[in-house]
Length: 397
Image (cartoon, rainbow, N blue to C red):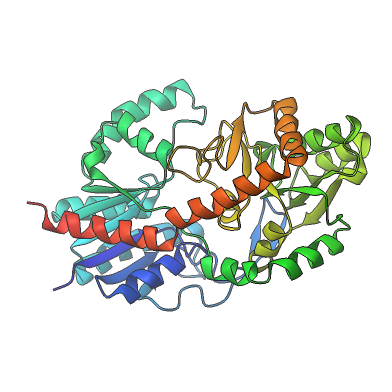
C-alpha cells in the first residue's frame, strides 16, 4: 500500500502545481490536493499590480484535487464553508499524511486540528525566516505559539538555510528537516535557454538595450517594500561616475511605486532605465535570459520565486540582507553566484554592479555557478525531499 497524502493549500499556485503533477506521476504515494480558493484558475484583479492577472491554463491538470470554495459565495461564507467541507473531505479520504502550508490560515488550522485529533502524520511547509523585522509583541507571541504548534509536526519540508534556522529557533530538531526547494517552471525555462541567443537579441532590441551592455533586471510588484527605487538610483549613479551606456536597468513589473521610480530616473538619468511594465509569467524567462544579473533590493522578502527563476536561468544575484534566499546551500551563495548588501545601501549595490560590469570573467563564472546551483535545487530535489519526508513519517513508530 502506498501512503495516502492530502495537501492542504490556499489556492492553485503556478510554481507548486507542476510539483503536484510530479508527485502524482511518481506513483510513490496516493495524492489529493485541497485548494481553499480558486484564485489563479480564473482572471482576477491584483491590487498591487493594479491590473487583471491570469495564470497559465491547465494549472490543476494531472493530479487529483478539490476546490473547497464556491465562486458565488461571499468571502466570509466561503471561509466557513471551505474549512467545514475540508474536515468532511479529510474524513472521507482518510489520508495517512496531511501536508499544510503555514499555520495561520483557516484551512491550515482546520487541517492541523483534524490530523491531531485522528493521529495522522503532519508535514509542514513555509518560507518563514529570521531576516525580516518583527514587532516585539509578535516575537513574544511566537515564542509561545510556535513551539507548541511545531511540536505537532512530524516533518518539515525546508526551502533553505534561513528557513531551517527559523525552525531551529523555535525548538525543531534538524532530524525533522527534509530539504524540498520551492520549484520553478523548469520546462519553460529550459525551452527558453535552448533559444538563448535569439531571445536575448529580441528582448534587448524591444527595449533598446545595447548587446554589449550589462543589463540588471528587477522582477516583481512595484510596492514600497520591494525598493525598486534603490536599483534605479544605483544604476543611474553608475552613469554619472563614468559608466555611461555600459550598465542598464530593466524593471519587469508594475504597481504603486512605478511613478516614484520613473520620477527618480527622470531626475537622475532616464536613459539608464527601462520600464517593461507587467510581464506575463510565460514571457519572464526571455527577460531573465536577456539580462546579466538580478537585483532584489527588498526590505523584506522570505524566499522570492524571482530569485530561484533567475538562478535557474544562470543569472548572478545581488540581494539585500533582508532576503531569505541566501546561504551556503540556498539560491544565493555570497561570493560564489552573487552578493548581499545592507538594505538601502545604494552605494554598495552600485559597487557590486560596477564590479560585474568591469570584470566579464567574474560575471561568466558567477553565471555558471548559478546554473550549477540550480541543478542542486531543481524539481527532482523538491520531489525527492517531499517523498522522503512522507515515507519517513509513515515508518516512524
